[in-house]
Length: 164
Ligand code: ZN
Image 1 (cartoon, rainbow, N blue to C red):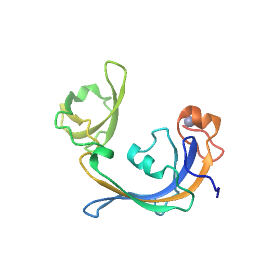
Image 2: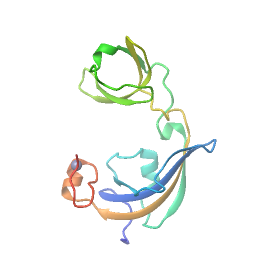
Image 3: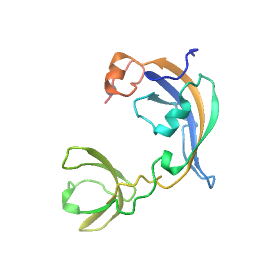
Image 4: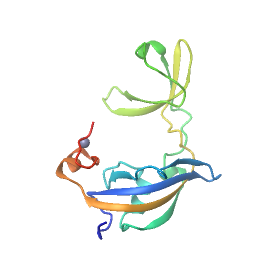
């Protein structure tokens, strides 16, 4: 346990539970190890990162984010149909799965599979939680300085370990 506060360049361990406005739990670290992220590196959604800034270990609080501050509004245009043959034949594909695509400018973009049939795969750039307000219950478990390697990589590493 450290007495520092959350700031850019710190690795922060949090427990969190994410619920929607209708009370449905989408994700929770409860019963698992806390989640580590590198503060200020865009590892988590910016609206949440901003609310954790300046907190201390042991702080527990609720964060409500409108869709625009979370995964964005739904863009009905952001749907693309691509041929099934664009994917490796042995790729396991299914609705809801996330893939990454590279556009012509070389930018990596996450896409989600909406639907799939024998010939085509329907993809959307809308995150599954786009258009939804999110409620996070957050507990800051620990705060530590990032190593030089973590800072360089832009993400935390497991204790004594290396990233994949
Ligand atoms: Zn790394």
